Image (cartoon, rainbow, N blue to C red; front, side, top):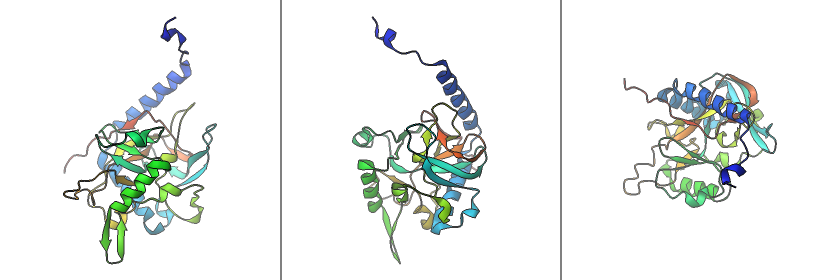
Length: 256
């Protein structure tokens, strides 16, 4: 008997959901602008500086028990976010095409592969966490008050996080579970931050280069590309759910 005959038929409902997810995300992707996505991401980073009052942002994020069976933890939005707005960022080590990711990617479901070729490893434990911390120690600048690290590592230890303490933090993209039997409410979207970020904001970026140009050090201050989670529809007080199979690439902004 041929191998194809042994395969279990894919439920028609799964095919319909997958089609609906793709069409919904593709339609939104066509409307996105790279400059606007970047600007909204920077707004969230600024809100994280010195624990600025979360009243400056219309939403906050908490970690709690997921509604997905067997998923354990999940990421929950408190407040409201409109369709097309950036909800949070996907943290992790950023690998260029050709960088040595093989070992870190073994048994690792947190690696996002983006259309432009880079990969983001958002696993918060094991080898992935050690690599992120090592790269963060490598990339720092000296200031009058001491060394300033050019990446935030708070996301590596956000177990049981609750924003009721008044802190604003938005690097929870790696906690968001995949929508299994329903349509997702956020989608992964490539995001390129401006090179002109103030150092105080640059230090809030939850991403770090896996490898930098050691000859020129040109990558030290330039933030790596990241992935933003964008609302697929209006969201209000609910668990965030994503589609692992789709990463949007918004239209490049036009030079003024």
